[in-house]
Every structure is written in structure tokens, then in C-alpha cells.
Length: 291
Image 1 (spheres, rainbow, N blue to C red):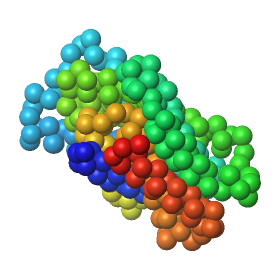
Image 2: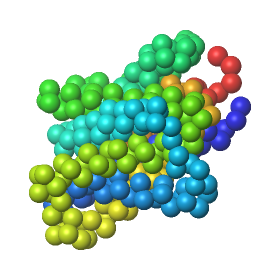
Image 3: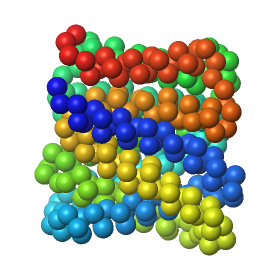
Image 4: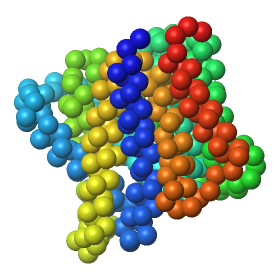
């Protein structure tokens, strides 16, 4: 079995696991969701322009008939996911937001079965169920030790839906012969235009110049959790089934929870640690040979 796509998605998941910590730090410095997300998107777009310019400029070209796919990927996945996830992090604990995000593998498995005729096996269903249980344990939801508002719950589930749609739309785009960098460029460009208009209209754009140190951290966040993570994930997605990629990426809440402990002293209980083990175990089983 080719392990390269596995490692690409794992690295992407670990980088994504850093995002809640960046959000927490940047929020404390007075930067709101709009500028934070906008800088992340713009950094990714500029990075893709540089990479494509160096590697192969033909990757800038797209067919007009495929434009709706890039627009849908930008608006229905990136914009919807980013808005819901950042708001969920503020409304709940880091671990809870990350856990709710990973209802995505189940969503991707169901959609992939219909759209791509992906074969649904007992092993896939079992591993995804195991990872969802692990996410619930990491968040504290399964033990009933953590109350969560309806608003926080809906935001987290919305983030999961948006994240899942990225795998679906990206697979369709990649199957039409586009490079991973082309997909990321136009998907993120669409989302950037949306957030640029939004931040200008709300007046939040002024926060970028008013808080230069926070803006620098936003740029670093964009490089790590935007450019690097989506490049690794999309390249891994090219070489594996969407449901498998989404399930492997459930390593993210485990990484997010561990960073929450190290950086913000959000200590994990025995149940939460067990959740981390279940998540990692489900990824290992999904990528093992045989049943």
C-alpha cells in the first residue's frame, strides 16, 4: 500500500490542529474572525500564485464550464466552514469545536457513496464510527461532563458539513484533470473575495493595520494552516478515496486537544485521553491491510 497519501493527510491534519490555538491567541490580541480568516485566505492565494508561477503557469488556466465548481468549493466549503469553525471555537472549548468538526467523515462517506459510487465497507463504517466516538470522548461530550449550547452545537456541525464538502468538491475538480494547486488557488480566491467584501463593509479591515503584531501571527497562521495544510491534504486526496482522507484527518482534534493542554492548560481527563487513542487507532486500522 502506498503510504505517501497517508502521510500527506496526517501532516495536513496536524497543521490544522494548530488552527484553534492560533484563533485563541489572535482573538486575545483583538483580531476578530473576519480579518483572521481573510489574511489566512490571502496568504494561501498568494502562495499558490507563486508556486504555480514557478512550477507550471498552465495551471492558471481553467475551463469556463468548471467555474461553478470552484465557486461552490470556495463558498459552500471554505467560507461556510471557516465562519462556523471560528465561531464554534469562541462559543465552546477548542476540543469541543474540533470534535464536532469531525462529523465530516460520516458526511463524506455518505455523499461519496452516491456521487463517486465509493464502496462502503464494514471496515470503513467501523473506523469512522470509532473516530467519531473518539472525538466525542476528546470533547467531553460522551461523559456528559461538558454542557454545550445549541448555538455551539449547530456551529460545530456546520463546520463539519463545510469541511466535508471540501473533500467532495475537490475530488470532482481533481477528477476533471486540474492540479491540486489550481483547485486551491481558485477555491481560496473565491473565499477571499467574499471575506474582503465582508471585512470592508463591517469596518473590521482597519484592525489589520491597527494591530500589526497580531496581523503577523495571522500571516504565520495562513502559511501553516492554509498554504501548507491544504496543499498536503489536496495532494493526498488525489491519491485516495474521499472518505478515507476525511477519516485520517480526524487526527486533527487529537492534535488540537494536545496543543490546548500544552499552550492553554486545558487539561485532558482519562476519558479524553482514551478518545485520542481511539482516534489514532481508527486511523491505523483504516490504513492497515486486510479486514
